[in-house]
Length: 296
Image 1 (cartoon, rainbow, N blue to C red):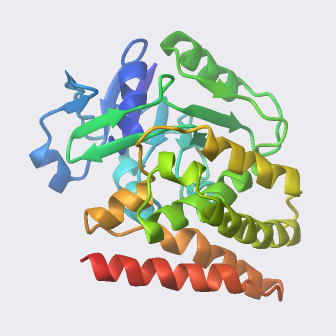
Image 2: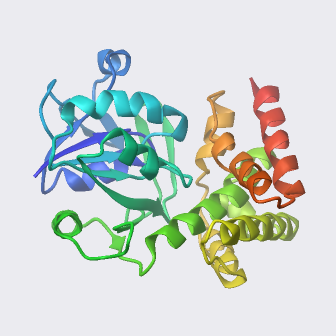
């Protein structure tokens, strides 16, 4: 199976170390990144994954970039997308799959995300603290079984990629969005690691307030998130006892653009759409923006 990955950072690189075991694997990069590319180092081991040749068509394309890179990613992958290409987006947020469906109406977009992944990136050096490299939740938009989904899960089985097939993939995507909105944003604002989040009761109280707003907006969008789902998000974070950092914290520390716009700001935007007040997320968005600015 010809697999191409765009985004070989804290999410994509650990996944690549598994996919290389059972697929014909390539990386997709724009020209600016390709000039500097000399391989990846994951947990002290160097990997050289070749770059995709221009106009080669992929069987499977996995996107593991940031949300703000999606327009550029769409432009980069378009020459590799054919009528039978499967596209899997591991991007955070709740919008990427619909944008990919609009951009590539003849391809097959599966809905997915990755969780339980703790890793740090410094340029092309990645340290992954999660033994399983994270867990990918994946499915069809309408939750049916399909040949395309079976092809991808068969590949994951071959490459020892941990995955789940939830009964409602859209709800699970919103669950991950809720987790990110609460904990990525708070970790960035407070500059704290997973280890320090899980025993910080004041931080967890803030997370619960954020989660309540996300649930209200999700319900208005037709997604049945509940208080129990919120507690599951908290339990997931509290299970991470290492010194890993959220992607938002890493971005702030390194002066990079964050995904803040796609977390708390998205809640605020959807809240306005449904006439739902979201004062905590409104404040959180501006707090993280202020912290990002202060760290530059």
